[in-house]
Image (tube, rainbow, N blue to C red; front, side):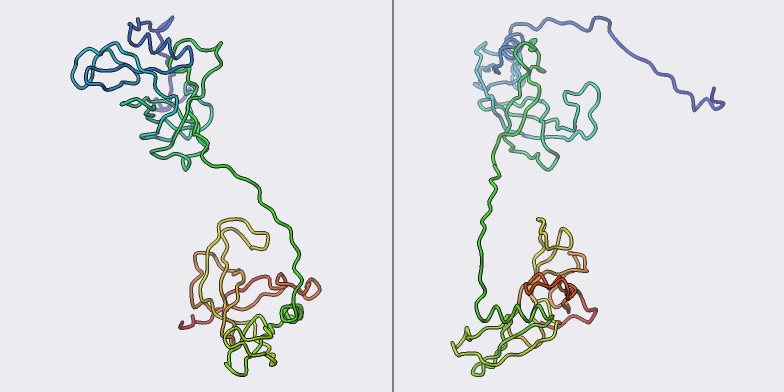
Length: 302
């Protein structure tokens, strides 16, 4: 026995044997009977509003309802919600779910019920939901005859895959041979005095033939970038950064991955260098460049 009285715990149970029983009356009884049959109805007030769940009196005026029952739903819209991360024994679902106020189509008031959603990010005001009914033989005329609500299907994912083969032309093949050797081959236009990387045989600005090759260093500057949150087999981690990098001595940037730096630390003007795969693993393709990593130099002034 604990020596400290504060450490003692006594467990108690408060229970009404047989449960608490009340008569439903004609209005709520009609509502529950319809639930047992897999339908939802509301009751119309003298002012024309439809109450779901029904009440014997209009809460706005105190006047008796008309006795006119109106089919509603079954779909509805979430008005407000609260997430339950750790369900309790008496909860309707044994996994995390949301309590939500659901305004069924045709109703003017909202019904409180459970929504079986994939997570709190899947919930929002305005979410369209539909009831998931218990099997017909298990319905007893209770609000739990609706096991829960579930979101309507609003999106679908269709696998998209296209296989194709690309044969590099003369200029791209020259550039990739250089990548296989661990160098960047660029072309300089004698007329425009602009240096292009990857290597090109014609100048995109003036149309002149490019005859002069140049090897550029593997260092450069990030001109712009994007943070990506979808997996990519080439990326070091998710999220990862793809960036336009202007190599030193080039007049146009090239796109590559950015690595060895957290995504939130990427920035324009960052000085970077190429990180190559080992020579024995190179295949004369862009995958020979693992990614670009920060050099530690001060940022360039763009």
